[in-house]
Image (cartoon, rainbow, N blue to C red):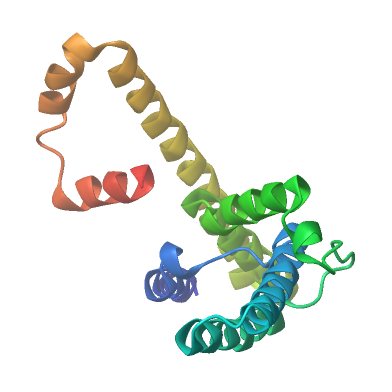
Length: 192
């Protein structure tokens, strides 16, 4: 049972990878996606009204269609920004909304948070299953979670030490030179 849980946990994290994980769109991102579509609509209308080149009109029309796909993916916001005219769209509040949505889009879940969540999920499943194996698995996962947290704290402390003691950083790295490849890989992943 223990080996199965470890295998499932490691396999799921390895296959998914942290780079593919993202938070669900927040309200600012949904409002920004909707505003993006309104911006594309107004830009296409403006290009037609100003009788710009056919190429620019086609590009703005394509942008309008493409932005509908983004809005459909993100879903509708609870509150819609004021965006009837180009002046409404170009308001400072909409620029700030775009910056906020961009920052939120760049965020990724922390690898430690993911590992914690997976272990909590495993503990919950094992507790539901009960019995001798369930109890052992819960004990094992709690112990693993505690060790994972300890490893995270050690790595954070080591990184802080190296930053505060630049002159000793080389000696610090040399002292860890005999670590196994597995340990080095684990530490490198934890730092990322």
